Length: 356
Length: 56
Image (cartoon, rainbow over the protein chains, first blue to last red):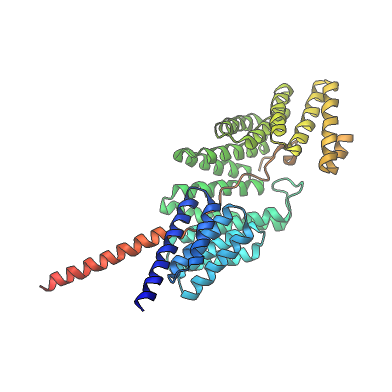
C-alpha cells in the first residue's frame, strides 16, 4: 500500500510539474509548447480535480489564442462537465464564460447566450461583482458579433435591417450595464475595453456622436496605461466616426496618429490600412495630391505583404485620384492594373466597375 | 444624428465597423491554486498552534 501511495504521489508531482511548465509557457505566449506540456500532464494524470479543471481551462484558452476554436470548444466543454460534476460553482461560471466566448467566435450565438447567462446567474448567486461585469461584457460581445453577422454587405452604419439594429441595441445595453459595475469597482482597464466596444456599437447604430464620446474615453484610458495598441485602435475608430460626421479634417488628424502608432508598433498591415484611410479622406477633402501620396504608400505596403485585394483597392483609388487631376495616362495605367487584379482575385463587382 | 451623405463607408474604410477590443478569457491557474492550498494549510497549522497556546 505504501508503494502504491508512493507511485500516486510521484504521478501527482510529475503532473503538477508539467502543468506548471505549460502555464509558464502560455504566460509568455508560447501556446503551442504550453499545450504539449498540458497534454503530457493529462497523460500522467491527477486525482486533484481542481488541477484537472485548471489544465482543461488553460488548454482551451491556449487553443483559443491559436485560433483553433474547435479544440478550444472541446476543452472548455470538458472543463464545464468536470466543474458541474464536482459542484464547483465558481469553476462552472468560468468554464461557461470561456465556452461562451468560443461559441461566439464560431458564430453559434444562441448557444453562446446560454453560456453567458449561466456565467451571469452564478456570479449573481455568489455575489461576485467582477464575474458579473465580465459576463455582461461577454454578452455585449455576443450581441455585437451577432448583429454584424446577420447583415453587413454594402449597408451603411445606422441603416441595417431591424434584426441587426435590435442585436446592436442589446449589445449597447449590456456594455452600459457592465460599465456601471466596472466604474463602481474602479477597474479602469475593464472600462477601457468596454468603451472601445461600446463606441463600435454606437458607430454601427449610426450614433456617431456617442461613438466619438466612447472612443475618446477609450483613448484616455489607453494613454493612462501606456497601451499603444489600444491607443492606435481608438484613433482609428475615432477617424472612422468623424468621417461619418462629415468632419474630414478631424478624421485625417486621427488617422495620422493611427499611422504614427502603427509605424512605432511595426504593424505593416495597420500602417497600410491607415494610409488607405488617409488617401480616401484627402479624396473627400479634394486634396488629390495628398490622396495619391497616401494611396501610393498603401500600394507599396500591399505589394510587400502580397495583399492582392489591398493592391487592387489602391489601384482603383489611384485611378480615381489621377482622373480628378486630369492625368489620364496614369489614371488608365491604374485602372488597367485594377482590372487585372480583379480578374485574378475573382472580384466580379470590381471587374465590372473597372471596365466602366 | 449628423451624417455625411457623400460618403460610402464600404469605399472609405478597411475595417468592418471598427476594431474590437480583445475577449476576456477566464483564468484558472495551477500555481495560484497551489499557493492558496499551501497558505491555507499553513494558516490552519498556525491556527491549531494558537488554540493549543490559548489552552495552556
